[in-house]
Length: 297
Image (cartoon, rainbow, N blue to C red; front, side, top):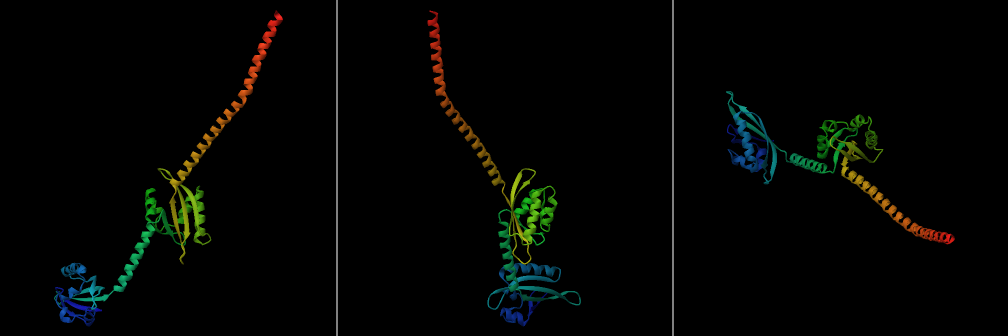
């Protein structure tokens, strides 16, 4: 441990050999306020603020700050200050103990950075994504999942972290064949007998009818689990319906056009023999009229 004694004004009065070896400075160069110069400039104001509060109401305090090592590198140290009082109850000094926690801080920073990247990737995922454990309990959701649950009459309590997704599907199975299919499929994904579950389903809401495709993949880890993604396919579904409607209309127009062409063709084919019949009938009528006139004479 690095150990030093600070008087009632937090001026250095003693530094142990570990402190001297760590900073590479002799005892005389650390006394008074000189020891503070080894604290990183960005951390000094924060330290002074904490020390001021400790002096107003003498009490134990804990701080983390960067302290310059003998090689010039600033290392994170965790420091604890314990007040010592005289028999009359007056503050006599503070015993300061500090130890190098730079390796721990580096590990924490790496973990935080890794978690930040994981969250960034998770939240940038397309669709509403949830991670469930081996028994179907939701252990993580992305922002899209939270937004959609909040829009659906605050259903986050029903599908938020800690809720068993399989139980949600079971409750929805009454009269809903899609929920039954999801339940059976998820069980097979979680037990490893199904490598992937893909299913399209209808989701009516108070304002409109939505269509989603659900994709479930197993988590390839020792603890098991699965990633469930719901993609909003409403626009695609509506476009498909519109395309089908246009195809039906086009087929109807095509049938009408063909019927018109057929009618014109039949009319053309029948008009010539009908004209010939009409001509022969008129000629016969004239011949009969002439024979009658001749017979009368």
